[in-house]
Amino acid sequence: MITDPVPVPEPVPAAVADLRALLDDPARVLRHDRAELRARVDALPDVLPGGTGSVGREVFTQAEAVFGAARVTTAEFASWLHFAATVLGHREYAERVAAAEPGLPWRTVWAWWRPVGAYEAEPNLSGDRSAEVYGTEDGQLLKVWALWCADTWFDLASGRLRAAPDEDAAEPYEETEPDGPWLFDTDSAGRALHVPYAWEEPIPLEGGRYVFLDARGVVVVEQNDTAPADWPTGGTDPEGMTRADGAPWFRPGTRNVDGPLTAARLDRVFGASGVVRLPAAEVPDVLTHGPTRTLLTEVGLPRHWGAGITSFAAAREPLSPGPEGLLRVGVFDLGHCDPGEVFVHPVTGAVGLRQPDGSHGPGGDAVFPLVRDLEAFVRFLEGVRVHMGVCWDPYPGEEGVKAFLRAMETVDAGALAEGAPGAEVWEHLFASVTELGVYGY
Image (tube, rainbow, N blue to C red; front, top):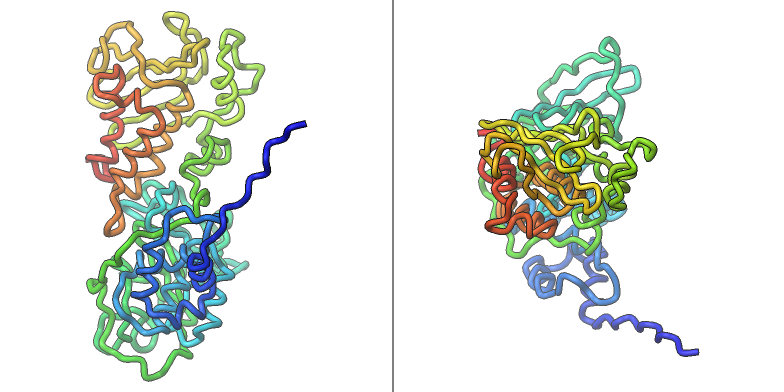
């Protein structure tokens, strides 16, 4: 019997293996010349032979992406590495950083944060936002709110998600100013530290802890009272960031933007209550397109979606009969024109739109092609929601709009091509994040 040969893993060059080992040891990273290390990292390919690559490479490149390339002490760079490791979920690496440099001036207690270069759905704290501390019998809670973020409650000490407390079971926390300079105090008496732009007006807590909030997330940090007492003063300069060369790097397959469309993924983006899934018995027999049946029963459809002046609402009676033998999916309100109805073809799965006043398409009762299938339709809606934050509030050097449009091209380039029947609709819809601001104008 002839069998296929077992593939032999590609050998890892010795120089690559040595660099990976260095990056995965924070004690060695802290002792190494940063500029030389950055040059070696930038020379690596995005995909390394022999596996997905180094956690240390993720942490190192993320630290410089957030804080910049300014020359700082080993102790302060340790604070940067500790923050980056915590944001990326590498808690064990963060603990090793703190052990390797116990004199770091501050450490990250926990963070709910969008890393640089990761275009993910949450957190999206663009626009109006707030963070409030409450005391309960079970300890202190942090409530985070924003225009595009539902009320989210955290255990203040650990960062674990918590259910909202009863209204009479939580008392607002009364802020008290710390004695002496604050962490990241811009006054000349404050420590000379570097800080990301927009880390302003923190909520001071007991024990030298602070809550910082900006459009990319919320973080609780703690100043280190055992750091050298002779740390230079002069205050923090929030405008003094020096951009780092190169871009942040992520291990292939560890970001969730290219994976399959799943129920869990939609629940994360739209909330479990914001997704419609149909029992199989309620899907009409006339819908014979298998992928569409699977999508509607196992993955789901957003119950409601909105951005700018555009919105979508799933039909109250999903898959009811429509014109030309089509089945109703929902209603698009495109703003400044009549709402349009979205339909799916029961055999091919193709999605079409009827827009009566002709602002988009031929008008009247005619249904024109909109997108390849219902999965692509959902991915377009999800893509807008996922990329809102990076389009509205990119980090320096991020090209959020270009990244969003590239991602949408991979979903259904044909629907977006010049001259395609539905291209104008999608251009109008995408403009809610590529041209309009967070407040819709």
